[in-house]
Length: 334
Image (cartoon, rainbow, N blue to C red; front, side, top):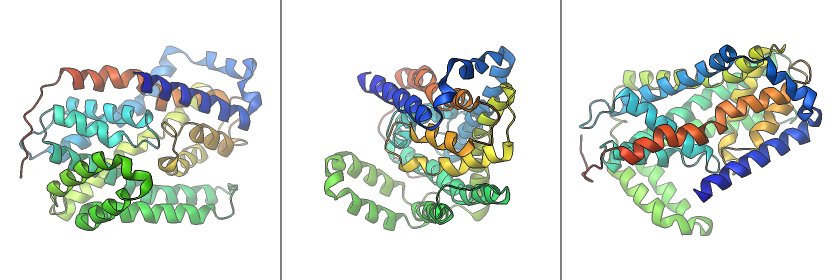
């Protein structure tokens, strides 16, 4: 509980401070007063893409567990996704996402090695999405004649995209090589204190074997279409916040900037990439969002995309973790 409170406070301090540094006028009372424009219907409308993200991500869990001895229901998939997201927003660079997924799937009856393979496939789906979506978003920004602050930003996007695609490929089709690389990384002095946790994870991952790599090509196409379909509404929240606030904005720029900048959040060592997310999107959209309402929009956006999980995570995922059945630790070989 203490760690959770610390993560929340750190996120809040970093978020508010970063917005102030980038757009100090945006935190003035008259600038934040624009939030009063939102009514209950607008607030509910903003939540629609977030709920759609939950639904499609839950269905992805169902898709991955289908055909096993412990398939999950759609509601269990949604609970697993929400707990994984909660674990991500409370840990540096979102690293706790896979842990949350494994814990709850294990609670629902899935053997640990199988739960690990599902969590890894969720990571693969997200990496593959950003592998194509980040350069596509960057191209959209360039076509809209948006000037980026770094001269080599396009190269950074290309390198990050290539890395994401290579890692996702290794985790599915060259798993022994990926495990060998991870073992070498875990031997580094900085990571040796985590060896007790990393080694069991790698053993479970090795047991999971090549379950998914043996699936036919059309299975992988459906999986990646589902992963992309789940992520696409996730980035519509900020657009709907701006619509609800009656703020003029270049919505293609708003959407594309989110996709590109979010791809770098996975390497930011703060809870849920707090500080970076607020500063990056505020800086990127200055001049492309009308008036002094940008800071208010960013605050509302982070409430929906980040802080809300400190509440709904324990309520939805945590409750399932506490009340779900405790399965026997039996490994399966389906």
